[in-house]
Image 1: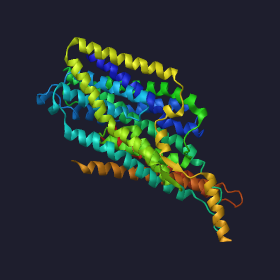
Image 2: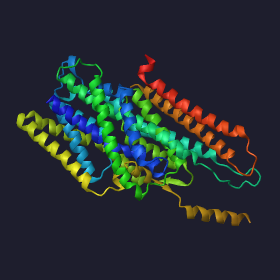
Image 3: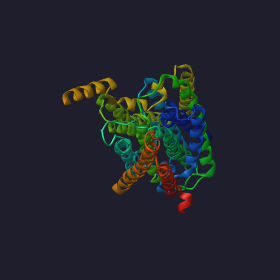
Length: 397
Length: 73
């Protein structure tokens, strides 16, 4: 059972890397700042490094959310198995339906649902859950978005150049941001490793604690860290090939300066949160930044419909995955047959997803999760701006 | 509820992001000025730009240094 959970958890980690490469590396590839192959390899290596940097988030997952060990409430590998299954199944459902969803929240939801159904409501540490998962989930995207907004404003203000005598616009020469994006997106990849790889480490550690092979309350062991780091790095590398195929279709209208500001905010928000052990969804933070930086540009407005849809997807994931996790836990509780059914269902779901993802046409709509956030901000059309400027100059005459 | 931690994250995010973006933007601006063809471009402009990029890099590395537990022990 323990081995099965570890294998599943590592696979979950792999898919996480597979999905999220795009968030970090899509913009610099699109602006031509860096060659696709180099970008993907760089992202993989930085995810690997990031996973080793900090283990605070892993401790949150393993020690904070579910009360284990000495308090008398015994979490079993079966429950964790059920939770993981719930997360994987929910991920598959959202993926098939094309709903924006966070795999991290699916994981927590599944685990909590399974624990409540399998042990009882007293097994969940709601204080820690609120503090380390739910509040950061609400605030981190807002914080990142606000920072991105301010940064975009600053970046544009500091580099806008006007002729001192005539007041007309000079060439802005913001090309430097393109190079800068290589570094900021590298930081995003690093931050991704410090937060997302940790969640799998936390799960594996939790299983080891539940199985009695590790002391409750201790951090992840070295081989666990290494295995998770490699799983996410390999996933990142594998996922990168999908992006390379999509590059022909073009991306959201993100200017280098704007991308630079958004990525700096994303990376700082995730790194700061990881440091305090906040387990958050990197995709959500990146989406918040993209929206914030979009608003920081002149002449933009939010498409509230799209933004609202994203927000509902965020709110929905935790309870929905919880229900799936709870159902799986009940199934697992019925005995060996239940475990077998759940295992078969989960494995076939994963296989099905994998085959479908290879078959389906890859466009940037399904490769880049942040894409949707980019579309939540409406940009004023170039033509409209030119027209309004022309009108103004007419008025002046 | 430890609201302090959330405020800490917000503050750290804002300070880090603004520092990086401001330093880099100033660097970009100096590069742009140094690249202007019509004026006699002062040479120190270019080095000022590089200094900004360098400072920006140092700021990032310092941030990472603060985070990695290996160094703070």
